[in-house]
Length: 216
Image (cartoon, rainbow, N blue to C red; front, side, top):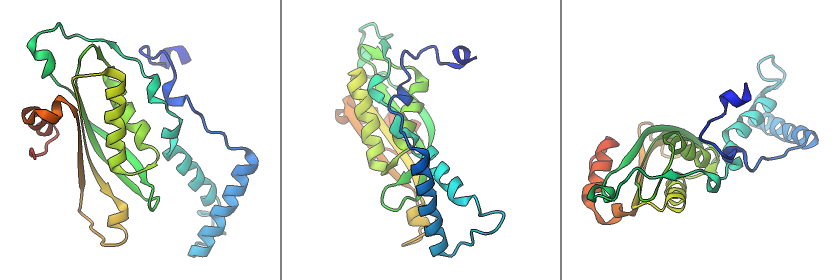
């Protein structure tokens, strides 16, 4: 069954290349810390619904930060389909919307949204599903939206050496919706450009149009 479910494009388990190790003793200690904090905040941990809350909370945090285990340098690239014509320097591959969830490193509150990733192939391409998984490797950490975009763009640039890379993210941040200014309907857009996208406004406009965003 494992061989059937494994992605045939994979030569390495790059999403699980750096597993984290937490001992049972450490886990028990962390549960005690979580319980102490919840009690201090006012939670009654003696009800049927809350007795296991510290354990569930830690498991949820562990799953939400699984991106630390991935190593994008181990991703596999394939020979390009470009045959050297003039379109090779302007033909975009765009994937999206890619949903993602992350935890703000400033308040540990979630932010979530969608990403679009584009690149102009040179000598190599990457499997389309890997673009989605690449976004999630960097998103499932304690981080900020700007860093996710930079990391995705840099990873693709280093792996493929393409003519250009474009990354656009749109997200809602609970740290601004639940606290502080309480902007319930605000969204944050960030865009990152590499190579040909930096110099060609037409490429940027085409990419942003696919993202459903007016060109800037």
